[in-house]
Length: 312
Image 1 (cartoon, rainbow, N blue to C red):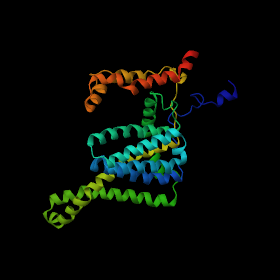
Image 2: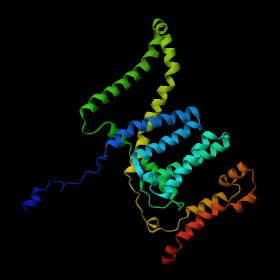
Image 3: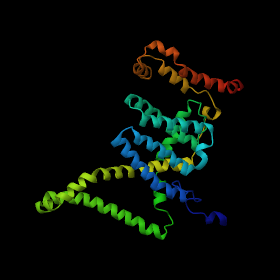
Image 4: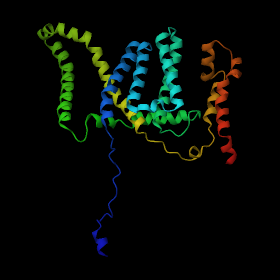
């Protein structure tokens, strides 16, 4: 046994650790974005749970694009696809404030909820498939879920940096202590009021005032705090995307069968995809052959990739 073999430990050469710590790159933009993301979540909670799809949602869409413009810069207007989707989404958001028909608002809201993530993920540059491929919906859905759930530590890394400066050491413990004190008061005051009649009589007006003016605000702030790490992680992934791995037929640009699956689901009159739109429009099954865009999606997909199919 030579000297090099004697120098090795009993278990052999050292192995790389399997649980590597994920490092987030935090700049001044992220530090500015975190409180803005919390304010946006607060607006979103107030709009969706208390106001409904009205002018508040229109304001939320405008604030969302303001956040994207502030964080991503001119990326929002770089391509014509992004500019078209921006105009369409803003127009759909405006109809929620200007329209009075709730069915019209509901359809526009569903379209808005589908187009906003498609547009946002398209700004990241982490996607492979172009917008005209029907299978890009699955790819962008995966990127959306990865952005929401794969970067939850970005908000914590921004709020609590590894190299803590003096301001962070003073402000963050103060905020955590204030939040803990409020939670403790929220538990102790009702318990003391139910146990002591004198305490209940002395604090009756104060408890009624707090219950009337601050109960909803506390719940809104709590829900916004829960939503903030998910939204911040999504925004973080848009600027620093992690592209999906391409394997098999997806990497070679093979046949896309999702467009044909969409058509087959919508042209069956007794399926949900076919019966619900027909019932909403008051039309019969005779309208299915005139569904131009249902058939145009796979045909366009085939025409765009016909040369590649012939080469293969």
